[in-house]
Length: 168
Image (spheres, one colour):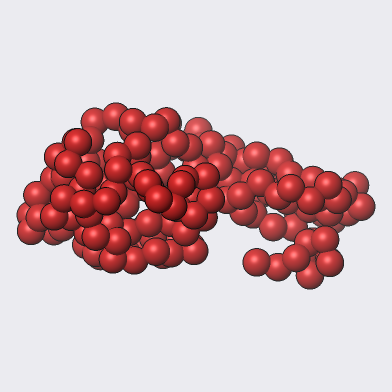
């Protein structure tokens, strides 16, 4: 990730809200998440049983949510303990996580509309922990009123609004 505070970039689109007071963040999207797997994975392994802690299943996880808000001694995926499952991959990119689930590497937690767009199968009917995937547009506070930056920010925000309205 480029450092906006050091002016390595003017604008960034991120999945994590920055905590630097010099940066201005605008939430572009807030998407509910659920557990998904590919059809091929499910044909080979079946669906995980709620309450089984993913016994006999391969898991792919996102490093940011995996190591951040959850206790490393009792990690969960969609509110389900994972100690009986096998973590086969951990990614620092949501795009790579999505690609891994599509490729059949394992079960993963993804934004619902993106996973459905990819033809993935939702494992359980409801997301149990109410997780959301947020997209943030970030810029340095000194640049937000610069005409070219303001125009680009509005263009990016408009594209997200158009996409959100078309996927509902």
